Image (cartoon, rainbow, N blue to C red; front, side, top):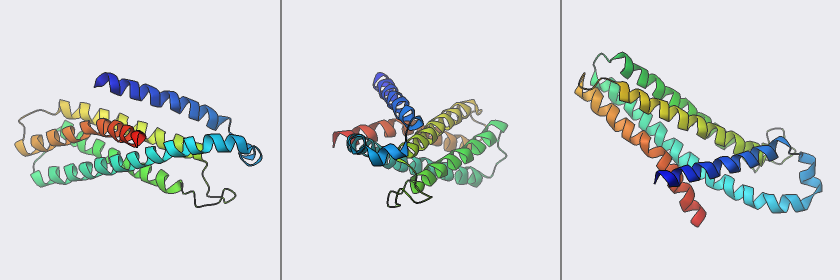
Length: 187
Protein backbone atom coordinates (compact mmCIF):
# COMPACT_ATOMS: atom_id res chain seq x y z
CA UNK A 1 0.00 0.00 0.00
CA UNK A 2 2.76 2.43 0.96
CA UNK A 3 4.76 1.47 -2.13
CA UNK A 4 1.73 2.17 -4.32
CA UNK A 5 1.32 5.55 -2.66
CA UNK A 6 5.00 6.36 -3.16
CA UNK A 7 4.79 5.36 -6.82
CA UNK A 8 1.64 7.44 -7.30
CA UNK A 9 3.25 10.45 -5.65
CA UNK A 10 6.42 10.03 -7.73
CA UNK A 11 4.34 9.79 -10.91
CA UNK A 12 2.42 12.91 -9.91
CA UNK A 13 5.68 14.73 -9.19
CA UNK A 14 7.09 13.66 -12.54
CA UNK A 15 3.95 14.86 -14.27
CA UNK A 16 4.03 18.08 -12.25
CA UNK A 17 7.65 18.65 -13.32
CA UNK A 18 6.69 18.17 -16.95
CA UNK A 19 3.61 20.37 -16.64
CA UNK A 20 5.42 23.16 -14.79
CA UNK A 21 8.32 23.03 -17.24
CA UNK A 22 5.80 23.39 -20.05
CA UNK A 23 4.01 26.16 -18.15
CA UNK A 24 7.25 28.10 -17.67
CA UNK A 25 7.97 27.92 -21.39
CA UNK A 26 4.36 28.21 -22.47
CA UNK A 27 3.73 30.76 -25.19
CA UNK A 28 0.08 31.75 -25.50
CA UNK A 29 0.59 32.84 -29.10
CA UNK A 30 1.73 29.29 -29.93
CA UNK A 31 -1.63 28.01 -28.75
CA UNK A 32 -3.40 30.02 -31.42
CA UNK A 33 -0.92 29.48 -34.28
CA UNK A 34 0.09 25.83 -33.83
CA UNK A 35 -3.10 23.81 -33.67
CA UNK A 36 -1.22 20.47 -33.65
CA UNK A 37 0.24 21.26 -30.21
CA UNK A 38 -3.14 22.33 -28.91
CA UNK A 39 -4.92 19.28 -30.32
CA UNK A 40 -2.39 16.89 -28.81
CA UNK A 41 -1.84 18.40 -25.38
CA UNK A 42 -5.24 19.93 -24.83
CA UNK A 43 -7.33 16.77 -24.32
CA UNK A 44 -4.64 15.00 -22.26
CA UNK A 45 -3.98 17.93 -19.96
CA UNK A 46 -7.64 18.89 -19.78
CA UNK A 47 -8.56 15.32 -18.77
CA UNK A 48 -5.87 15.31 -16.07
CA UNK A 49 -7.06 18.71 -14.83
CA UNK A 50 -10.67 17.53 -14.65
CA UNK A 51 -9.72 14.46 -12.59
CA UNK A 52 -7.43 16.49 -10.36
CA UNK A 53 -10.08 19.15 -9.79
CA UNK A 54 -12.84 16.68 -8.96
CA UNK A 55 -10.69 14.73 -6.50
CA UNK A 56 -9.18 17.89 -5.00
CA UNK A 57 -12.58 19.50 -4.49
CA UNK A 58 -14.13 16.43 -2.88
CA UNK A 59 -11.07 15.81 -0.70
CA UNK A 60 -10.68 19.45 0.30
CA UNK A 61 -14.36 19.73 1.16
CA UNK A 62 -14.18 16.64 3.38
CA UNK A 63 -11.04 17.92 5.14
CA UNK A 64 -12.58 21.36 5.65
CA UNK A 65 -15.77 19.83 7.05
CA UNK A 66 -13.77 17.60 9.43
CA UNK A 67 -11.64 20.56 10.56
CA UNK A 68 -14.65 22.77 11.24
CA UNK A 69 -16.36 19.95 13.13
CA UNK A 70 -13.25 19.30 15.24
CA UNK A 71 -12.98 22.98 16.18
CA UNK A 72 -16.67 23.06 17.16
CA UNK A 73 -16.37 19.79 19.11
CA UNK A 74 -13.30 21.04 20.99
CA UNK A 75 -15.23 24.19 21.95
CA UNK A 76 -18.12 21.98 23.12
CA UNK A 77 -15.74 20.16 25.47
CA UNK A 78 -15.58 23.41 27.50
CA UNK A 79 -12.21 22.75 29.06
CA UNK A 80 -8.92 24.52 29.24
CA UNK A 81 -6.85 22.96 26.50
CA UNK A 82 -3.20 22.11 26.71
CA UNK A 83 -0.82 24.25 24.68
CA UNK A 84 -0.49 21.45 22.12
CA UNK A 85 -4.27 20.99 21.76
CA UNK A 86 -4.67 24.74 21.32
CA UNK A 87 -2.02 24.63 18.59
CA UNK A 88 -3.94 21.83 16.85
CA UNK A 89 -6.99 24.09 16.57
CA UNK A 90 -4.79 26.80 15.04
CA UNK A 91 -3.35 24.26 12.59
CA UNK A 92 -6.92 23.18 11.76
CA UNK A 93 -7.77 26.79 10.95
CA UNK A 94 -4.81 26.86 8.57
CA UNK A 95 -6.10 23.63 6.96
CA UNK A 96 -9.44 25.39 6.43
CA UNK A 97 -7.65 28.39 4.91
CA UNK A 98 -5.78 26.16 2.44
CA UNK A 99 -8.98 24.32 1.45
CA UNK A 100 -10.59 27.69 0.74
CA UNK A 101 -7.61 28.45 -1.53
CA UNK A 102 -8.30 25.18 -3.39
CA UNK A 103 -11.93 26.27 -3.89
CA UNK A 104 -10.78 29.70 -5.07
CA UNK A 105 -8.44 28.16 -7.65
CA UNK A 106 -11.24 25.90 -8.82
CA UNK A 107 -13.47 28.93 -9.38
CA UNK A 108 -10.72 30.83 -11.21
CA UNK A 109 -10.28 27.94 -13.67
CA UNK A 110 -13.53 28.68 -15.47
CA UNK A 111 -13.07 27.81 -19.13
CA UNK A 112 -16.30 29.42 -20.19
CA UNK A 113 -14.31 32.67 -20.14
CA UNK A 114 -12.77 33.33 -23.54
CA UNK A 115 -8.92 33.26 -23.68
CA UNK A 116 -8.75 36.95 -24.61
CA UNK A 117 -10.65 37.97 -21.45
CA UNK A 118 -8.51 39.44 -18.62
CA UNK A 119 -9.74 36.87 -16.04
CA UNK A 120 -8.81 33.84 -18.17
CA UNK A 121 -6.37 31.43 -16.52
CA UNK A 122 -4.43 29.06 -18.78
CA UNK A 123 -4.80 25.32 -18.33
CA UNK A 124 -1.18 24.93 -17.22
CA UNK A 125 -1.43 27.77 -14.70
CA UNK A 126 -4.58 26.21 -13.28
CA UNK A 127 -3.01 22.76 -12.85
CA UNK A 128 0.15 24.22 -11.35
CA UNK A 129 -1.75 26.36 -8.83
CA UNK A 130 -4.04 23.48 -7.88
CA UNK A 131 -1.12 21.07 -7.39
CA UNK A 132 0.74 23.64 -5.27
CA UNK A 133 -2.28 24.07 -2.98
CA UNK A 134 -2.82 20.30 -2.73
CA UNK A 135 0.85 19.97 -1.78
CA UNK A 136 0.41 22.71 0.85
CA UNK A 137 -2.68 20.88 2.14
CA UNK A 138 -0.76 17.57 2.36
CA UNK A 139 2.03 19.33 4.28
CA UNK A 140 -0.35 21.08 6.67
CA UNK A 141 -2.23 17.85 7.29
CA UNK A 142 1.06 16.08 8.03
CA UNK A 143 2.10 18.79 10.48
CA UNK A 144 -1.31 18.69 12.16
CA UNK A 145 -1.16 14.91 12.57
CA UNK A 146 2.33 15.18 14.08
CA UNK A 147 1.10 17.84 16.49
CA UNK A 148 -1.92 15.75 17.51
CA UNK A 149 0.49 12.95 18.47
CA UNK A 150 2.18 15.38 20.90
CA UNK A 151 -1.03 16.24 22.75
CA UNK A 152 -0.94 14.72 26.25
CA UNK A 153 -3.34 11.79 26.48
CA UNK A 154 -5.81 11.71 29.34
CA UNK A 155 -5.76 15.41 30.10
CA UNK A 156 -9.39 15.59 29.04
CA UNK A 157 -11.31 12.64 27.64
CA UNK A 158 -13.59 14.78 25.46
CA UNK A 159 -10.69 16.64 23.84
CA UNK A 160 -8.61 13.47 23.47
CA UNK A 161 -11.42 11.59 21.71
CA UNK A 162 -12.12 14.56 19.43
CA UNK A 163 -8.45 14.95 18.47
CA UNK A 164 -7.98 11.21 17.87
CA UNK A 165 -11.06 11.15 15.64
CA UNK A 166 -9.76 14.21 13.75
CA UNK A 167 -6.34 12.58 13.32
CA UNK A 168 -7.97 9.46 11.86
CA UNK A 169 -10.05 11.55 9.45
CA UNK A 170 -7.01 13.53 8.30
CA UNK A 171 -4.99 10.36 7.84
CA UNK A 172 -7.56 9.23 5.28
CA UNK A 173 -7.03 12.25 2.98
CA UNK A 174 -3.95 11.00 1.07
CA UNK A 175 -5.57 7.59 0.61
CA UNK A 176 -8.78 9.24 -0.63
CA UNK A 177 -6.85 11.35 -3.16
CA UNK A 178 -4.97 8.33 -4.46
CA UNK A 179 -8.07 6.14 -4.72
CA UNK A 180 -10.15 8.93 -6.28
CA UNK A 181 -7.53 9.72 -8.88
CA UNK A 182 -6.92 6.06 -9.75
CA UNK A 183 -10.67 5.38 -9.94
CA UNK A 184 -11.09 8.35 -12.27
CA UNK A 185 -8.27 7.12 -14.52
CA UNK A 186 -9.88 3.70 -14.89
CA UNK A 187 -13.20 5.14 -16.04
